[in-house]
Length: 479
Image 1: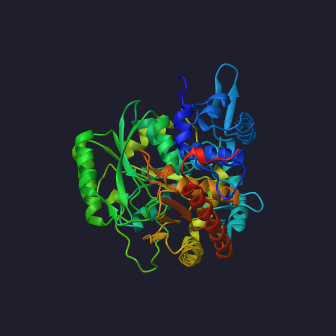
Image 2: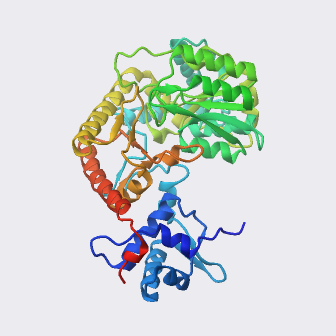
């Protein structure tokens, strides 16, 4: 597909004048970079030639040449013979500012508030050691357990029973993480062009997984106060989607919790429309209130609800173990589809999780306290340094959904990157775009780290406002 063109006239209207006497070439480079990062100039678009922009802005050719050269060096412009100059995002920035979130440990000096995962709890190394002691009993076999080790499936099924959902081990299939579970469910039940209804905002990596399967996603808004259940029901009734994917337990990123009556209402809607309901339960162990009563799992309201869970949040992401709870016939379908994706989860990691689950109550309490301390430090620091930011206090989860006074989240993320701080811009979590007034801030770092992060946020906010406010006409630029 041929790239779209951004005319010199259009670009000159978008560029902002230099503030504080900064050289015009630096101002143009930075303003153009922000337009690309904001998505106002789409990646892949052809930007004006140096000659055309020189004429439109009334500046010297040298000024524009230096601006383009700076952007080219930083990866925001690519030039090809015969194609001109195209808007781009640098390799790392393209992952951080759009599309799926990229997990990983930060480089020294960088702070990452995009990853909603905790360090391993005390006792993890001992669990690995104990698992290795049990491993020889499995070495005489092939090592392939397509449904997962029976002892682990039994332990997972027991946890569902404890939460009020009768479950047998043959209703569990162990996977290589929650996202792997979603990919397996999508591969089993979706065909290209099928509709999927899901909440918006939502976890961007799930969106990417469903779109890779060919899904046409329909987003239904969810707010910090909860879901618009009438709108959700109406959308499901009209669209008759093949699948509906929700995060009813401490929603990511908003943090709200769906009450029992609404769960029953949504489950009935799924049943009436013949829709497969898929529920992401990865955050169930992180209520904000220690004494909060937990609603029944969605699976208690609908027998054919598919539930996805994971060890990554409650225990440690490095285990790469997740699971699906479904009916026995659904498990058979999923197991058959799995043969085209992967054959089984690693045996050693399953044994490690089994050891950790034996000490689950202590470990989960420890992880919950980590999150509460991190969240408290983050909120207190923001209320002091950025009092105009609105923090939506979550019912639970691993993040805060933060509302900005102005629609500048992408600009703040770009400015924060210069402070070696990584943040999640609201549009990244949106099904259909928008949410430029929001940031997702994860609460998984030590309290001292959160204080440092907020100090950097304050600088980024100031930078974003300065760039936003300097906006008369290009005629004010000085060469």
